[in-house]
Length: 448
Image (cartoon, rainbow, N blue to C red; front, side, top):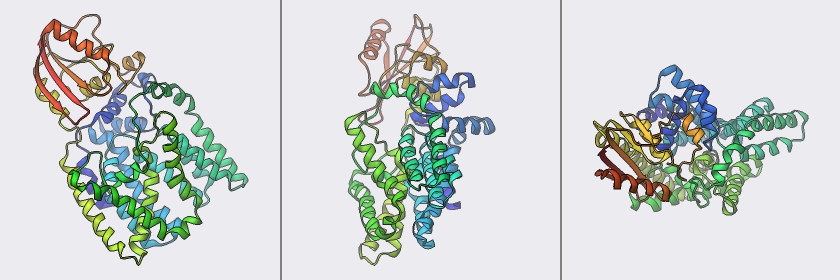
């Protein structure tokens, strides 16, 4: 645990990436604006409320915003240890599973991200521990809270409640009902938010096992030549691990349902409806598969054990080096601190750029009221609740730094607005920044 803490602490002060900037905005607005803003989002309030508590105690900072994830990430190490003991009653194997949870690059990343994944995984693992250790009251609380950390949590809740009901014991039936009631309390909010997903939002399809492939990675991808190793290694470890662990897995249907059936179900649903297979929401199933990894590496007599152990150690070192060396915001913060220096205000043409600007800009931010796109769709009421400062009907006088973000989701209306500004004010381009093949930032300066 101390080593895990030391590995995570340097990541807490990194610049916020877009989703974390969104968290900052929801945490920073007045409490009376919180619900209208939240209903424009697609996530439950669980993480945002905990982050508000953290910031209210420690003050606004990147570390305070990420503190709930840090605590959850450290908690996951202990939870994996307890769960492994319950699954196969091997202390050394449980300790190795905890060590892997402590050092896997994905777990370091999600333990230092101001978003939901680590807390969601915690709630799921506590629910499973309660199920296996015959603690129905703890099960009801943990399972009910799963739905408050991510919308996909409802799928976890459904399967976990079915496992509780399958025990056919009155106290477990009551626990299942209690969990369903607690989770269902967020159902009206979920239905209100679901319109964004139905409209397309930003979700993209991912292929099966993506959540598992990324466990040795972080969000960014290291050198392309390492990808065959980094992507094949988790699959091989899982195959060997499941085969080596097949006896205790056969006696633990709960492990099989959450580790295998749930990701398969979500991927299948995503083939017929809007994509719902999000790697970040599937950390718990990935960690369940880490337990057989540890069992294989410790107990197998196969010659592959040494090969895969060496490959795993190498991949962890490579990806940790990349994790610490890469700026999480990938240079976006420099746009506002350098290219927009000395401007009277920053002007944005999209909702996502407005939220990013409000997190990084030292200048006042003015948003175009028509600036919605599928990369971040918010109702006008939600944007007003998030304290967007709109320019209606004309732009304000002064020196303007206009920051535009062009992606696959940029709308024709936004492009037309940019062309209108160019025709009227003849701005000059002062910076072009390509974060990757999808995101292109263009910074313009002009006077009104």
